[in-house]
Length: 141
Image (tube, rainbow, N blue to C red; front, side, top):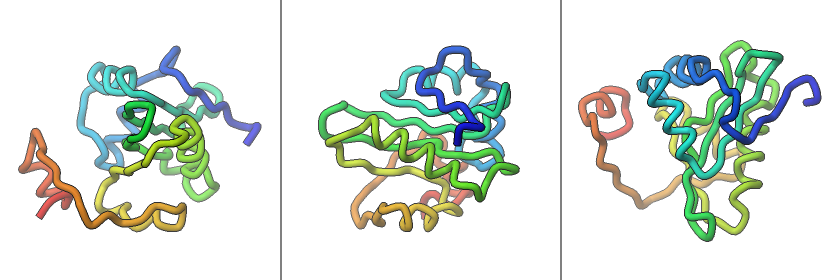
């Protein structure tokens, strides 16, 4: 892992790259400026860089005491399969000690997280700002 840099702040992050990674996986359709605000307003963030290239991202919102939710976990396609997603998760989870953690992902990646200790929830509802998009993407029935 020493080959890559792990960053836990939004300082000096190229959010155009972040936007591109998240858009590629259908995890966000925000523009660069909005994506930057989303990460800057999060409780915890993780970025993995290979030199100047952002190759992994993730963020959490939390009260810092008992509840947290993970969002926007993604690794650049050409870097997948070498454990970087787990590195993003572990670094976020370490910043959320003592919290019950929920994870939000795209439906096509849903099963990926069970082997990392996450369990499928039987309870939960969502109210989306763009219901048509999220229905089309398979987030809701």
